[in-house]
Image 1 (tube, one colour):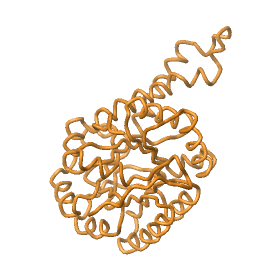
Image 2 (tube, helix red, strand yellow; image 1 turned 90 degrees about the vertical axis):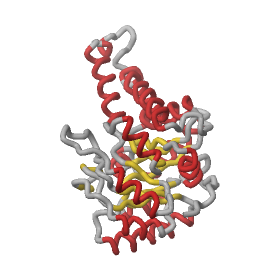
Image 3 (tube, helix red, strand yellow; image 1 turned 120 degrees about the horizontal axis):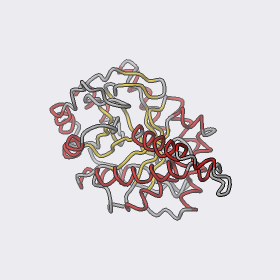
Length: 302
């Protein structure tokens, strides 16, 4: 499938959509990191990590995270200003992750340069019908659209799945709807993988890759998948990999160490100042972002 030419969002500059970055990733056999962000520290750490690695990045925002940060427009405005203030020069897409139908429309109006409409829990015909309406809206903003077929295991913002494997024929049908990328369930799950996880279905991934005319594919649930599987998935057409839990874990660990060291009780150095309290966790996220970008092969690809 021929990719649409990337255009900078003139109304919402400096954000870009995902068209160009994912097309280049497919051709270059690497993947762009999609980092879920949960607050200002997450956005800042992700932007700085991408800049340090000289890599394109996708900032993913769930509807729950957007609500926590006081709405889509607050998130969009904060991201726009932070890119400029931090002098970020790498391509940055602001993407709604696992969006509902109304959520996708609202995020586009608020200034997001990309949205995922997750209609995987609907009957397939309804998924397609709603997706078409989201695409029409996205085209007005030159924004990119991600769709999903099959279920990504675990739970994400109220959408729960046991990890159904995607139907190849449904993948072909939905890939023909002028979407930018496709998330297809191949045994991946959100959150921490259980000990008895069977791994990714590479035979299914290969078939989807070829039958959808090599549309960029998305791997959700990037936390905990062995590096060898990550690299193999990229070689088979995965161009976008979502990471969330891993960043949350390193943030919690670094913050815990700071408190256990009783640095927050140091009144002379004002260790209780939230800017100091949150710094170790924020730095840990940045380091993890650089680590993931390097693993995915998108470093120095900006």
